[in-house]
Length: 175
Image (cartoon, rainbow, N blue to C red; front, side, top):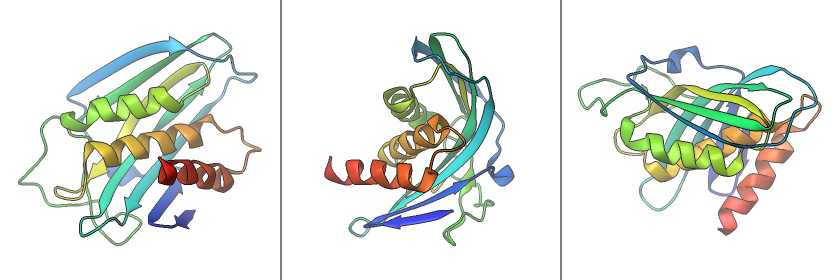
């Protein structure tokens, strides 16, 4: 599903195998959370693009959320090391702009902050898919992608993903 709203474009997918990468480091944090009624594992991927000024923002993030009936959320963010300045983009992307698979270390903290600020349900959330652009990706774009990924992974199967993402985009465009 592709959602366009104002300067935002967001693709929400079940998976993006082309955005897998070798993890070189993991960061993990645990916070209080709401118990889930059902224990289930969901996978989702969000590709974020924002047209602002002369320099667009791009980021792709994906992962799994395994809910639990406990009262804690563990967030694990896997990173791929330094930005690969010599690597060619190999992930085609949803918006016709190829990306480099991986989550550079420099964006890991922004991803963690975005997830912790938005995730609500108890369980384990693991980020294991990512892709970036050497010029058009930033901590801000990855933080926004993380917020949107958390929104999608928080949803119950009966919830409307498009409406939830649109609501969050409205909030983000005001802030």
